Amino acid sequence: MSFDFPIAVAIISRMADPVATTAAFLIMTSIAMWIESPVIDLMATTTTLAKNHQNHIQLQRFSLWIMAGVASVHALVAFTPIYNAIALNLVHAPQEVARIAHTGLVYMTPWAAIIGWRRHRQGILIRYGNTRPVGIGTAIRVVVMAAYAIPLSHLSQWPGIVIAGSGLSISVAAESLFIYWVSATTVAAHLLPGMGENDAPLTMRKLIKFHSPLTATTMLTLITPLIISLALAKAEQPVLSLAAWQVAMNILFPLRSSTFALIELVITLYRDAASAQILRRFCLGVGVFLTTLTVILWLTNVDLWFFRRMLGTTQEIAMLAHIAVIGCAIVPLLGALQSFVRGLLTAHHLTASRFAATAVAFVTLAGMLAIGVGLAWAGIVSAAAAMTVSQATEFGVLYYSFRSRLKDFGFVRQQA
Image (tube, rainbow, N blue to C red; front, top):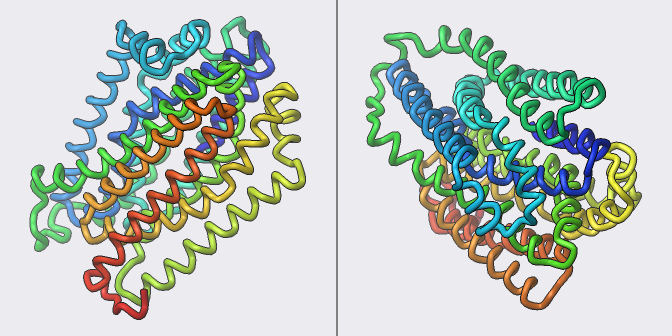
């Protein structure tokens, strides 16, 4: 689901004012993703709780309320002075970068709400084993993004940030429509009235209690790009550093995000200690593969080729992004291990443990970035070190929670 960002950056890099616009794209998406954070875990919540018709109706109502909330917040930020307070006073983005990012953010106003509906319906598909449409939907999203944005970049006079922002909204809308259409069959097969009604009813209070720690966790996680942007904005050559970090993320984020779906995989397939052991080996294998792939891309300079040829960035930006790639090489492995433990904790409704781990990681990230700024480290080095150390810390706290609840998971101490 992260490949629409490289398409946007590749277009921006070939249009007017590419360095400032690429830096603005980082600011724009960082703010949009943080506003989006309450809807992210609708997938995990729906995967876990969509057991019957009553739960389905309650989850649908809950999702619509959250969608309305994030759309309202996005509009409030995009169309009021709140944006300047965030971009200029909080993040300290250069004024020209903040101005460009604001324009794109306006065009992304419906983005978060649309993603919320899509993730809710994807959760239904995942719970009942119909995962193929999730991948097809992603392909549709990428194709629509390319089909919309590439011609406009050649035929229109629109700024690159406008094409990127509107393209992200339109492409995710196309994906959401497809997922809704496909998931209707799954709803009819498993979630009609009278199906599974012997289960305890899901009250709104129970639902909020389950989902709130997940939302708080994701809000802390997705404020990370803003905190990193703040540190980069205080580094030497801030515009260059912001642009290079965004370019690096076009390789690092797809590799890292490949581990995100492991959470729903564990929630869906975990049954007992034996299944947990198999899932653990699988998650470990995915993490090792992705981190090894990252190192190979760096050693062979394929990442540099991608930055220069595919994204069209300058040599200076590409070299800085190259440093970020190796600095964050272990992050996919850490993400896979985190997802395994998060999945087990969520399956047992122990969502508060996930929030505690993320809170510790956030403090670690902020502390590392503050040290980097104080010691005048290069912005890219500071950001990469902070991300890696904070992710390692988060896994450590998650693993501690896992170890302390082995009996709940059906493990014996020796098996852990």
